[in-house]
Length: 123
Image (tube, rainbow, N blue to C red):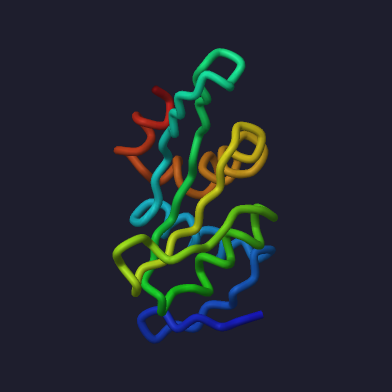
């Protein structure tokens, strides 16, 4: 368990801790995004592949936070952002992963506290 110093408050990096999950929800609110990747290739069944993507970005000083998402969702990857060597991105792709892990997290720890994303979430 790693401790994170947030404005002189110590937060335990424990993905089983409800308080820490709300802390992560705040990062999703500020630094997270949901998008859809569309790939066109005649080898795909219908010539198109549509894949949902969840991302959270953070400065290299916050790598522990990004790895918390990987631990929480039990999948995904943390990589350096192309062209920004000090910025890293946690990415989780795929319908099953998004539905099983990300949507319940968003519904519990982000959506109830976000007026703007609440409208977008239900579109």
